[in-house]
Image (tube, rainbow, N blue to C red; front, side, top):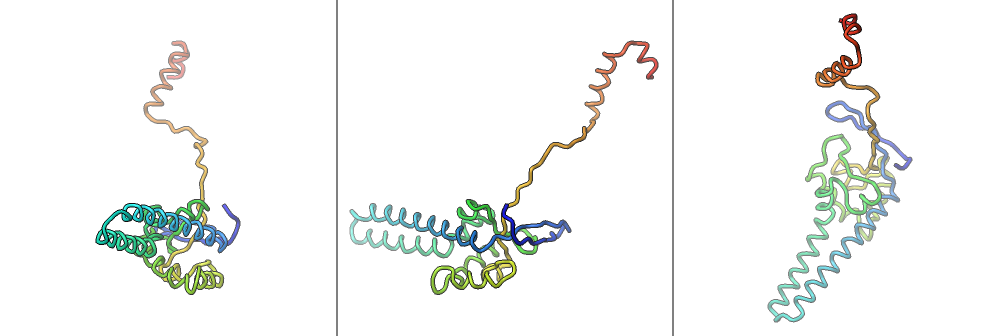
Length: 196
């Protein structure tokens, strides 16, 4: 995990979680990776529709062009939201760089928050690339772009916990029975008489 600004969030169950906020450089790199994924997907769709529509009549060719416009619209407006919904607050770029979107108040990330933050991406990207979003995030103490502020979300580094085996032994009724049998096997009748 990267060293940087941390934030503590108290969940509704009164459990305090501490997260490291994703910095602007990491968020920008994830955005560029996601943009490349979207462009490659659109190129694939364009080639698939172009190849299948090239031999078609003009009516069917128009249908393929309309399909292309619809796909471009869906990818532009719902691509990031769909990825974050399916991947639990991540996109391919975020997953690759180890960051995730979470709610700023500790509540579970919901579809309406994801949709809101991604619909405002159009404003964040105005006039070109993430200019307004980058400026907003650079002046915000939690590095939130406009979409994050409105949706109540933050982007944090993934945290990993190394779970270890407990350093104590749990005795169950079955384990006690097995231990008792082992003990009676190792002790003589006289020793058992003393213990009882």
